[in-house]
Image (cartoon, rainbow over all chains, first blue to last red; front, side):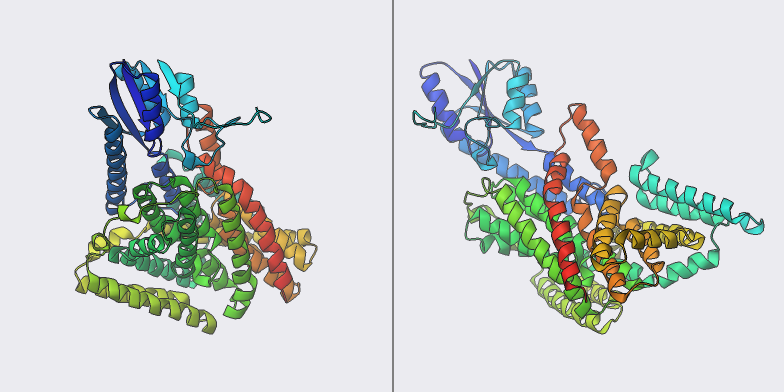
Length: 160
Length: 436
């Protein structure tokens, strides 16, 4: 089974637990994917245009930003390898939701494992809007099955 | 061309208005990949070629606004040379270290840092230099990027009327309507503190969920990687401290601030050359020369418009709408300026309003002061409504979204719509309360 695990820097433990409990004895070919969001770079460019400057920051700043993106991605993927030893790792750059869907199609993934939203994003854990825009897009456009790994929430009978 | 042909006043007025509208439309839509400077200079050039403005009058206007041009030059040079020294990177790292591993405290520190940079080095420095630095910082710390980028983007303008030097718009307005430091502090610094508090409060509430975590400071690189020359860095810190003091003193004594900015830039340039941190050629590339063309073009176009008497009538219209009252002048001035900055850009809007305010006559000094303070306030804070630029940009982003192309620029707009009207209203009321 070809498993595509989508990392966001905060979800590796949840993904690992889910994979272990759902596929305890299955032979898995796993790829850990981390996408560096290019959105903020575009926003910085728009901001520069408003101040009548060229879209891209100077070469020194661009290099600094690229290095930060790269080191952060490497860090996250290395952390992922501690949970999935032997897995392939891949870093892409762009809109995360599109890169995930495109890579799943290119790689012929059987299952995409994704969390509904990063706990850092501050959205609700359950209920409306509990699935962030990245996971929502993946659910809507994925070319294969998707495993949405929610945070385990205990709710009492009255809430349920 | 028409300089030698007598044109009826109405025809001249129609031609000037048509060229002004075309120029503004060009600035808003930037057709054929033309930049704003080309559009403004094109409009000014057309007016000159057609003889719709006297070349001597255009030259007088530009020479009269020398303080604005030199201030822009000094300001951009100071920011660029301080950036070379690693000054902004060092400040951002200190903000992270002083946060004690708390995301929330780092968020507040970024607001504080952005306010200080805007205060002494203008909103340009915060928006253009601090923003990418903060992006690098929070990416390395593996914190959510957007709240911190929003903080930098918004505080650049929110804190841009703490001092006259905090925004070049202030210089454009104050050059025409001089204001002593005490009056500026009362009518603009105090409201600025009020709107900063609102900005921080609303953002802390909006992003409370994303700022719960902690970070590991060890993820940041060593300070040596950002400061290449300790000697030049220390020299830059000293000069910047002197420039900050000189700005306040010059504002108090009503000395042209361009003198301070240019002197500071020259001292920093000498230091950078001595420590071999920059070359003249590299320094020249750091300056956005097209801004001068943009401002010069706008000054000429608005001067031609002013000669038709239309801006005076616009000023009278503003006065009429305000009901000749202090509250009316502040509200009309603020809302007019804020709407205009989002429709075009804050520089042309400030130039147009400047000209219009020149036509506001037979009013009490208090009402006139209300209009001037509101113009600065609205033109400085207004851009936060559509932080991505102008309404034209927002419409473009909406079209992209309709085509299923995701653009996070719209997220800025959503936040701007929540926080900016609140800040505009609170700030305007504070100005009104503090008017003499």
